[in-house]
Image (cartoon, rainbow, N blue to C red; front, side, top):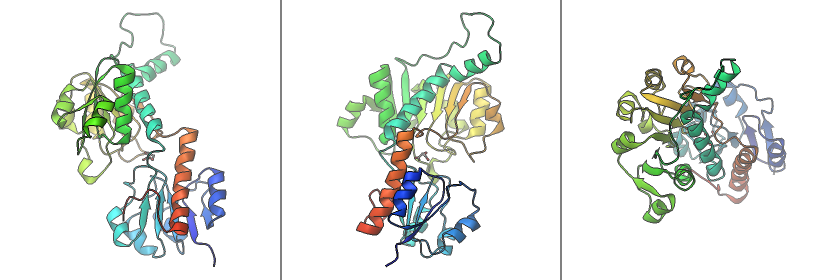
Length: 322
Ligand code: DGY
């Protein structure tokens, strides 16, 4: 019997392509060519599986055009690029890559928080521009991180990693809001206190967004929420673009109602709102929170594991539907 055909939609580690080629008839996009939805649909003809990244949209129209498709293995923990109800209705398995990126992503959240609160990139730009002439008492004086109040919106695995770093490493008072409250033992371990969203906004010196993107979380931080945040607070988004109203945030940054922000994700990325680009008090990174070599390798291998287990053992390892 000939092996199932699969498509790898973006460049990945060569050893992952080689490994998959030992199990499947593989077409891969190692040149990382930009495919239109029509080209993606054409390449998916006859394919039973696909390895995607978060930038590859799998929607109802694509699924209808690709009737042989049985599994989409996303190389990301988030899967808002999938139309999950349409996949489930068609019996298409969806998988993601949880756990392997938790600590790395939490590290990066903290890095962005430190960089924004302590004005690291802003001051580096100043130095590189040759503007540093002498020391001054208030030069790039930022906000205190240790001992301050850290607010976390979304308390999944990454949120818990951020809480542990804040509470245990920086002596922060950690408050969180989530759809459901953590078990008491986990709250104690994270040293985190559950509060309603209003209290979170009002009390956090630094607010970290780690919630999944769903239609319900779109603009969870918009103009009204920003107005309720503590004056001079820091906002960090390592979740998904669209959770923050970037235009409203740019206004608040410009007016210094929000002292600083750290953003790894953007509405409509890779485009970035020009109003944000014009703000000095925001640290901007191109969706790299999980980007260490080891973690990206683990993510790619887990996506490959899902494809192999699905076809050879009839069960996905980390399913998100069915
Ligand atoms: C994820 O895993 O969801 C990261 O955002 C990378 O896409």
